[in-house]
Image (cartoon, rainbow, N blue to C red; front, side, top):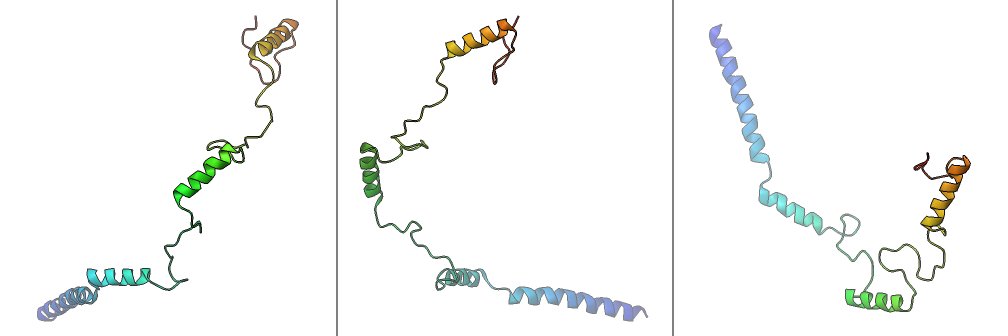
Length: 125
């Protein structure tokens, strides 16, 4: 009985270790994996991304830069970092000065009306 148990344990151990050896033998080598990767990169259109110019322009950087400078001198474009156009005549911000706003706030506080909309009630006595 003990020999059958020992024999079955040895057979099981041999089976487990032999599966690992066979699995490693069938695994592709690093060179094979690299060859497959380079072949996949050279696949026809539609199967892999191609390395083309995404903008589709044939101009060089110097040509684009010269055109941009010319457009800015002619006031036809927007300088970097600005959202509006150069010819925009829209007023920026409030038309009242800081002194005018302070005077309005003081007058409202003295009259007991509270503070105007959007202003803090600092300086009230």
